[in-house]
Image (cartoon, rainbow, N blue to C red; front, side, top):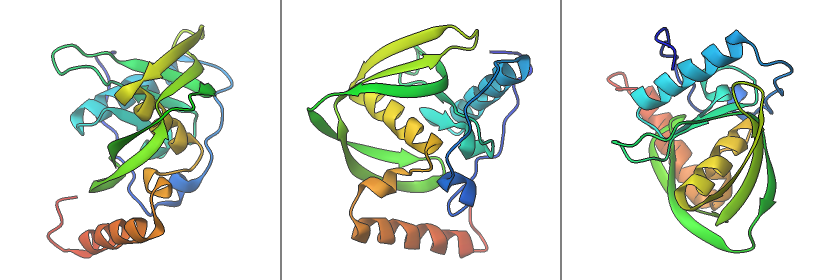
Length: 176
């Protein structure tokens, strides 16, 4: 990471940028690399394990992920990620989101995904992800398509979460 990485404000629901499809990165520049570093610093500070550019109010197809252990970071920076293959096997994991603070829900997703992306140097990479990493990759790519984890749960649970979030936002002593 660049020493000059800066923290960025994280956009919260119901901000409309979270529902918009992000624009592919046409050219990887120093600005793109700086964005990746800033996003990584923001994700670690939050703390979170994934962050998509729309969550920091930038409509670009860029994500950062680190599902490694605290003492063994495994930062992955993805530009224009695309899921190539998903497994038929499904898994359920509890998900949360930095843009939907303090709320979690069990979400069912494919247990394994293969994703292709560009790294920060413009080289094409592919990754087969399972477990938590597979869930995180899908969650962050969903953000690039204007989809939130609450879109994968029942309407009743989604409405309950949104009511809690909106109530929290109205509190004058809110921490967020």
